[in-house]
Picture 1 (cartoon, chains in turn orange, yellow):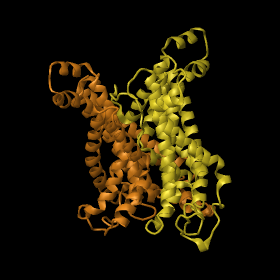
Picture 2: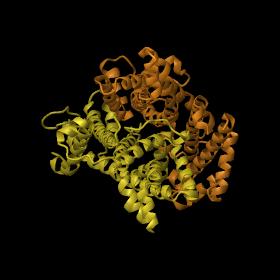
Picture 3: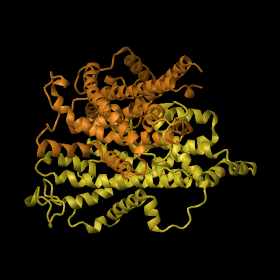
Picture 4: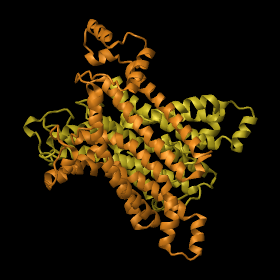
Length: 315
Length: 321
């Protein structure tokens, strides 16, 4: 199968998944028990009020019509109006998305190379003290939830040492880059949580590659160990990390929700918490659809890149 | 948050990376499944096990500690967890109040111990239900194959496109915050993941000779799955349970922390951390002790899962312990 055909097939698959995702979002929010109108008005609302609200939201029309309207709107860029804030959802979400992207990008730039480096080193020192220490430290990193790490770092760096601000509250017009200090603790929290998986998979991959025959051949040819590792082992061992990074983007989105809450950071994750706690259905639906879409896109790109670099998966 | 499959090389044969994490977990799991062909472990002393897999022993010990908390907790707490001692508000840890007191003078030690009941029982229930359902669906569609398999797995792919916490939040928003709903939400999050792992384990097992033999004997699909496949998939299922348990604790406490899970005044650990945040500077013990409880439970479940996984893979002859 040529790369072109592979990309087209993978693209269609992504579209199918996105379609299913949108149905899941719609069904969970609008069709499951817990009527949207009474969700908004609270449990002790009068039945007449609920009925008026249902009428206002157009809930009395059949579900599949509402779904189609919602999807058509989402595709055209008409993302609806926030029930709580009474303003269009689209610009709000885009601003928040930009803020979250800064956090996510910084984390990936720091965490991925660090994790890969640790993984390679641990793999080369398999079973030794260094390997076990890295395993233990990264395990603890991933076992403490984001909100525990975040609060610990606040206690240490903001209250004891007083080096960094405890939260990311800032003036509305300020750009993220003007407040670099604000970003340090959130990024550090996300990095700690992300390290374990990537370093672990890189380690396994490295160990696996180092046992292959072509490495033995390279060694028997008399090439120096350094060259064996960097020229022969690494390119093969690093291939799977592409997929792993894509998966990390998915986890990162979950982590962002928590970290943004801990540091009061104005990102997409906190928007989602706001939408859930205020039962802001249009905002909730679009935030979730957007995040799932980004995750799908990341996986799509990773798969295409993987297939491009490793023709073996294409058949 | 991350799954930590212990063994298993990660060269996903198919690049359907929407669920690559599960693919990798499945590689580990099927390696573990095939390990049953290896000779049995034989009798080993506790110390041999400790040397072979310190992870497993430490993990089991931590889990046992928490189990003790759950069982003995209600009898061991010095105060009822809701009792106010207004004159003793925000006291640091002392012999009278082992973990200090909160803004209402409630004993933090008692609340953490009761929190084990809340958080851990809830997480265990969600894990058992989610993995149980996932195992059933995964084995059924894996064994059956064909269109049903294709259809079910595409839906699972769709559900896997949500980061776990986001899907849980989505479900909570619809069901409303309560203990039972947290269990349901986490269960739904787990089903596609467990289904994927167990389906792939089943695919690895179903063409083996003993399964063929059972089929030729004319056994029903139900019989083959429960009597032939299930016992051979126990290893991966145990690993799956342990890893999911650590996730369930992380998920349920995270939901509690952002305020859409278990509601006050229930002594949930995530909720306690969230409530302690106002006093982070003046009374850090309000946050630290529940955080410690969460962390030890998650580390315990992770180590236990890793240990079991590595042990099973080791028996298969891998030198990756």
